[in-house]
Length: 385
Image 1 (cartoon, one colour):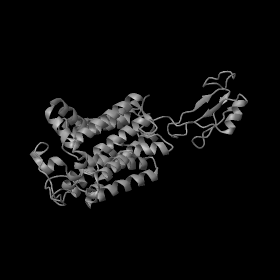
Image 2 (spheres, helix red, strand yellow):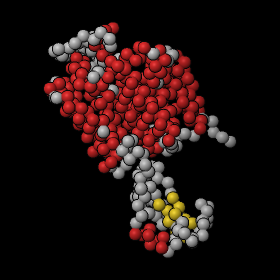
Image 3 (spheres, rainbow, N blue to C red):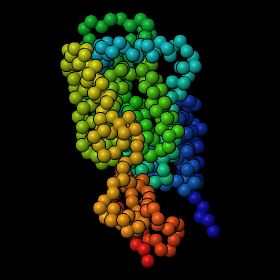
Image 4 (tube, rainbow, N blue to C red):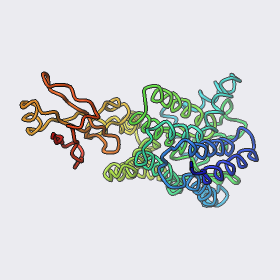
């Protein structure tokens, strides 16, 4: 007799209640719709990354909201004028995006849905990944660690151009000859780094490594739209630039690649300190462009020098499977071997390599017994009766 999935029923009912009571088409509503999908997936034997992802999902949002008082604009000064002045080196991309948004009702609707729908996009990517607990656990860790952005917000607090200029943005922005910190009461100073852009980058990374081509393209398009949506009124261009090392740090911590986690955190902190102390304003524009380009190229550089695939580095190519001398010897004796991909032990699949001239063996053959895998990347010849 099949066991009744009581936990799935309870979590799904609770999630449906939250989604039904949330304001429609808001960030909260999209988040609860995603929660419904996570709970409903229990009926389909989905292997979750943590025992109760619903509680992690809600707990992270609750902790983040409770910490919001730490970055209220009425309590600490905002460095918006400094960030705005720095963006002059790049021609104020946020102004051009905001003008396009105002002139196109359809674009405004799309960018609004993209910006508010990030939690749902995160859940869909979570469910699109292979049905593997270790893989989804990494994704959960990277997403939950996104809450650490609140500590970086305090280094260089800012609210966004809409809150700095009000109705004058983007068409009647006054010149700022002497930028300085100022208080912006009633705002949240959560600009740098952009949490939306960083999370969208995490989606791209996990999709590029674990999902199919269709989902890779979808998350790549979503990342572009998210960056555009953040520039409409909520963020400065530099916020998107410093989101790159933040995303690198989050993924590095989730993957236990501590050099990447530390390097991304240090680079992010260095940018924020340079902006807060206004050192960045004294740099010549060519240096600003060079440093920004180097920061944006960080994932590509990691993909080139690392032993794993980062988006736009190795273009998500599967890691090569090296052949040891023992493997060559086994192939010479026409003995079938089993190899594993050395890129990621969580997704490495056994590959039966049968030399030319060897009689074919089915996966259910009684003569073939696979030796348990040891270290990832090592060739494991099977035992043959």
